[in-house]
Image (tube, rainbow, N blue to C red; front, top):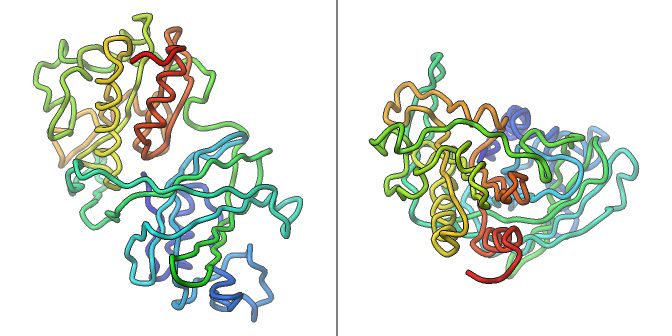
Length: 339
């Protein structure tokens, strides 16, 4: 999961991070009883959907996890930080959706977000280097308690806005505004599409499981088949793209643990495969992205897909997924409630 910028120097950092997640602008506004929580917005004649720098007095800041927003239903996920930069999990969050190119004042929808706590299974992200010279140190990246999730529908491609209304257990509502660029089609494989039959590696190709995954406690059952073999097996399939040791947050490990749990509950009627994001997880100083990760055109990690017996994608989750969500998707492709 890609993390957006820190509260400090938000006007610069958030804009740079926006290139990654498709967010065009971030605005903090109308906090604590409609008091202005933006710096320079009113004086410059800007409205709440224009890019301004967040004022230091703003009590909350959501950071989006999504990197792939498109027409139709989307599963929006985000963290919420307080003024100290610490993640909060006890606030109520309502997401109001605006079609900014048609009406900047009235929302087209309003949805309540729910909180998904992270598990404790994921290792701390490690410092690593990509082949080609780019160095990445994930050790300093955000590690939090979990993410908020809300189902959001976009009716068309273009510029949309989301107003997050954040209310603590005791306190006043804070409103935070995001401008989003919504694509006509998803960058990642979409619902109803055939899953790419990538040739991944299995234990039959590489008996040393440490060369197949960065998971510190790997489940051998997730590496018995190549992805192309599993897609031709005639069984439903769960595919998890994640990198527990090198994730940009701690969501990869917890997500993979959820995949293990759900797969064990439904096996042997359902296959499951973990695709490590990097081809060489045993060489953290020169990591190469896996061919399957590139072939699936995934803009972030982790991703989880549920695929039916014919190879059609029936459910997909960017970022953290709950046991209930994943179990429901598996049950749907099986067509009954039997475990």
